[in-house]
Image (cartoon, rainbow, N blue to C red; front, side, top):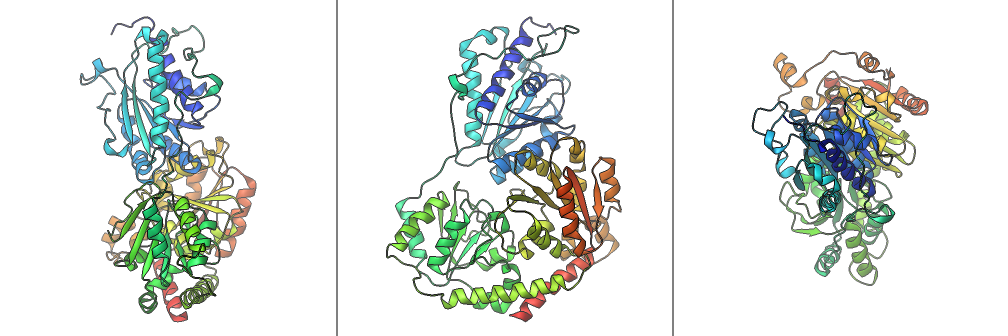
Length: 587
């Protein structure tokens, strides 16, 4: 192919303009996997001091790292890869970002239009690759030599870059896709001419402002929305149910709970499991059929996604329920909500509180019989659960989750893996303030967990710990490569039950060889040796009492470290069933 003079310079200018605009818009973290066609973008990111850049060999790890950074910060992060199947490797993280409403800028390098569908190497159809998973997608044409000096082209590129951030932060945040084509020569410098540098970046707006500023969109409630919540609050037998994406702080919810006399059934992912009205034992309580039947509410206010607990979701069937979501998503898998409110929950609840405290509906006297019944049940269940967990020192996944939540310092972030870890945190952890709990619960997959956690730590999230199963760790073991060299502080707590523990709770768990082969999938690996192969220190604890000292020591030592807790899958199922039994007996 004939190489046109000036093409390399134009590539550098395009890449530099995109990166400059992203930095102006607040992008602070980027991840890339190495490749040739993405060279102009890689050089531009490496030369941008406002953006922290991390390099991964695996595109999937790079994408989940960017996802974790965006999830923790609420600001878009960038992931970059070269052309071909590399772009397909980003798809799992794109799917999670879409479902979990995480702002993510996905930049894939591509061959120019004349090389597509010609059998050119490392070329697949990348236009529209992620389908409906992205909020916005654009195919950026390869720049011509004259484009570098064209004010119109530069304005076009700056507009594209700033729009990408705006679309990612839109009413329903999520991933955007820029498929950026480059012709050869990819860089302006000729071989042997010295260090390769990106092209000069034409000036943007003054004072470092982005070309077009965008910010998160807050949907205000309508008068009808407020009236509906006020009317709902007039019921005595009501509950507040909260899952991830609840979008409101605990103080506002506590005021609403105080005024209505309703208990708060909050998944830890909601950030609302704290305060005097939080019921942490709802999973165990609602598994007791007599309690669940006697305490079925008349109304419910749902904030964000459903809790992880399928028990709670089924219990609310046919209950008059308002679903509140800040993005207007239909987070109602059982299709039972009577009204859906697309509004910022804090604005909605504050408006309702103003109405209620001004003499409208709502509880006014001392604790109602409804509130008292829930408070007494929580006390009894909590005492029974904690007594069971503390009664044996053998490692148990329920106690691991509870004790890890308890021991983390104020201001810490706990990232929880899907499958059993997120359920154990929901089922067994006590209410506590000052802890943020994150998880990839959009698509609920275990893939990319290690890299997600590292991305969270890169977003200046304070002390970071993670709770994962062994299979999730192994699934993204490549994320540990060079983890200790990234300057991050993360303590991974790994429940090692030699396989897929969640499957042991399902009907097919008959203990047969077929079950083990298809579902249990024992790996037989020494996870401390695995960690050592990646240069990550690891400690294996042999008792429940040893967990907290090991976690505290790991966090004090700094860096990326593993604390491995060996458990037994069959014994774990029995212990969980025993937990539900002791709570039912206590009631």
